[in-house]
Amino acid sequence: MRSRRRTYIFLSTLVGLALAGLIVVQVAYLDHAYDREFRIFSQNVNGVLHSITRRLETREAWVIVNNFVADSSGTSGGMTTTFRVGGNDILARDERIIKISDPVTGTDSIKVWINSTLTDHGETKTIADHATEPGQSATRFIKIMLVDTAGHSADTTICSHVIEDSDRSLPAIVPDSIPFLERRYIIEKVLEDMSGMGTARATDRIEPAWLDSIMTITLSDAGINTEYAYGIASNNGDSLIFAAPEEYGDKLSESEFRTRLFPHDLVARDDELLLYFPDQSSYLLGRESAFLILALLSIILLAGCYIFVIRTLWRQKRFSRQLIDFINNMTHEFKTPVSTIAIVGENLGAKQGSIDTERLANYARILKQESGRMKRQVEKILEMAALEEGDFNLDASPVDLHALLMSAVEGVSMRIEPLGGKIETAFATGTAMIEADPTHLGNVFHNLLDNAAKYTVGPPHIVISTSDEGDEMVVTIKDNGIGIKNEDLRHIFDRYFRISTGDLHDVKGFGLGLSYVRLIVEAHGGSIIVSSSQGKGSSFRINLPKRFQSKAGGAST
Image (cartoon, rainbow, N blue to C red; front, side, top):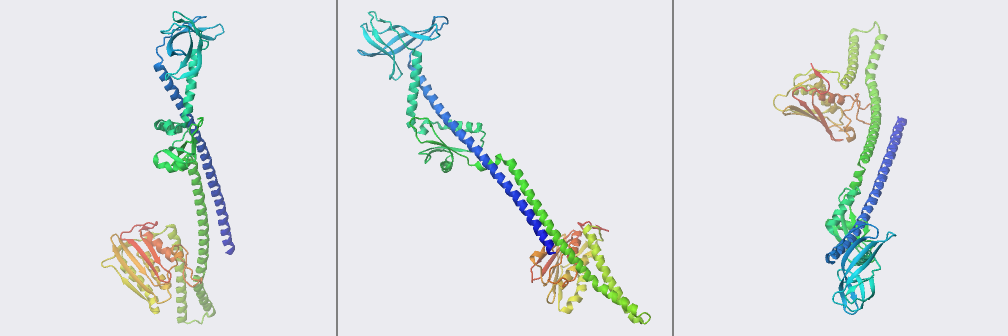
């Protein structure tokens, strides 16, 4: 037995270690998968932040250029352009009004007609073929300069030489391309304006509505579809100056997802764009939900199989021990009648022809009594086997419950009265008729009363009470016996189970009595509940339906 116990412990430990190893591997793999998903998520979020930053810079540059062009076109005066294609033909003829820097009279306006011609080398040359200075005829130095609409002069000289003309017709050669210089001037002005933007606050340079829109679009394009919060912080993130929604301000300050705003400014501020995801963990787990569910199911299945195997092993171990106890007890129970029959047989053989009639009758009575005892034990074992298989019939008929109880009381009273014990009854008033098999139900009551008288260390005191609860009759049997341990309480209705008393043969029986009681009660459609404390006795409560309701395969005949 000791070696078998060690085998059970070894197998249980081995299977447990294998299960623990599998669970550790599964958990480690899940943790690795989560880390991998987090890294991918972080890369995507950082990519979103950089993309938004680039879009902010691009949009700012576009706004500056668009505003400059719009302002210029609004004050540049009229322009008429005609096109013809071919050889050295004029490609464009523009009439423009530009400013003149005059050292004598100051700055004034002058009309210049510009011809653009196509050379043999495929290049465009622009010349001012006619210029008119209003109100002046003197020879003077004239410097023609391109200026913006606000009146600030550029640094590009278009034409500078002496013009002599008595009729105020001023031929002039323009050595550079005016359209090219205009584009160059626009670019220079845009760069100048953009360089000055670096000192402005980020909140003054960004439209909140546009930022919210581009944030949603960029995150969606990156496949990040979860709740988010964003904000703008200054001083390397130490001071939060904007948050949406505002309740996530503290979380945004601690967020690891951040990037510098307008990183290409010449005079850069320390403003940062921040991102925070309130449901980040659940979102990442959700992306791995299929694998996570599969892994958890695998772990649960493995754990369930382990528990089932261990419980089966220990149940088999306990059943094996109970079966051995049953065989030992059965051997002990049969030993006395077999020994008695053997002694009677020896006496009859030794005294053949010299036995008187009275002694022969006494031997016959002993043989009948002991053989009957053996027969009852065998029938009890066979009956329990039939009950376990559900192969039995219940002969249900109207029965007086109180009469059955009193019959059982009479059978047990003769055992407890010599011990100074007593049985009290507290039956419900009125009739207690139920449909039941009187033989089997009578055996149930007899077994319970017999156990109450058997498992006690003092004078037995048994109380039997009944109550009518509508469709059921309730029978309660209380005793002042030794009680039942908590660890034994859940096994007392198991087949072959006997309460340990320290001596294998201290208590008679096969451990079939209470198992039989439960089977018969359930076969009648009832239930039995036991409550007990060690040293304080036990209480059995039996609920029996008034109308027969078979639940255990038994049939009414």
